[in-house]
Length: 197
Image 1 (tube, helix red, strand yellow):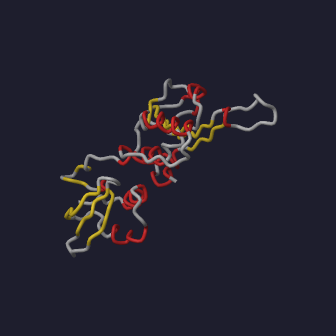
Image 2 (cartoon, one colour):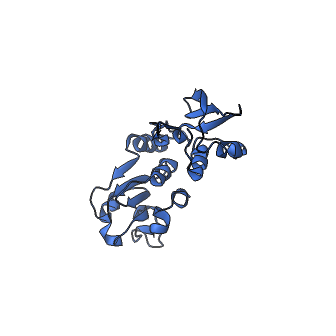
Image 3 (spheres, helix red, strand yellow):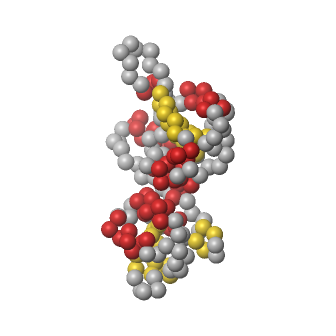
């Protein structure tokens, strides 16, 4: 059975590299039983056939079997190196790939981010959402993602913090740059489509 969440189906299709030209056919599968014809292990897509004998490729993670999601998460897929073949860039890529997709924030205080040498995305919420995992997957090569149950500095409720360290900020006077951050609240954390954008 194909998941009935249309927004998730479309987001997962883009993450899998499936073009929008067959989205109408994919959307017609929502909540329906399908027959699996082929599995592409490189991009983790599945060719399925409908009751009308139409064949279409869909992302593996939108399949549901016996009421449960098929055990696969796109964030566990291989990550392709897409940068210049320079030693520093490659080392940074390998180090990032060796880290967990979403790490626990070292302490409940956001001050622990000051030790980061690159951009970071932090989810301050009791539950690690599917949308945040998708966002972390999308930006895994360029930033680190963290999860913490709460961020006392931001007050109560769910928040997402986009953090950029002082070392990546520009200032007219060398050494005077400060870290920058932007915060989004419930309007983003409660909507996976907004979160992934």
